[in-house]
Image 1: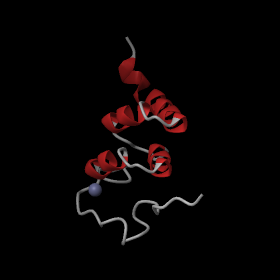
Image 2: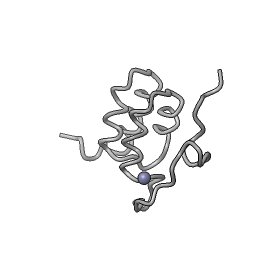
Image 3: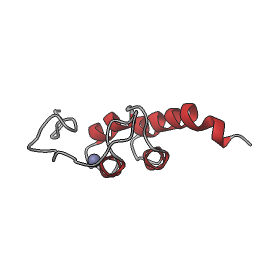
Length: 88
Ligand SMILES: [Zn+2]
């Protein structure tokens, strides 16, 4: 089965160009990331969760994603990026 949606940014017909400022080290702005975590296509969410530099609140949404792979990736990302701040 082919995903109905092209990866973000690759298809101008499906993805409006974003004019927001993107933080250094991040792939997209927070507004776009928060929109993508709600995406109905699981392939889009799997792609998003594997990106580097996702915001913590974005990962928190992905962490409870109904798709096992998405939540697993989010869990791993949380563990590596935020373990220092979660100790204690
Ligand atoms: Zn954006």
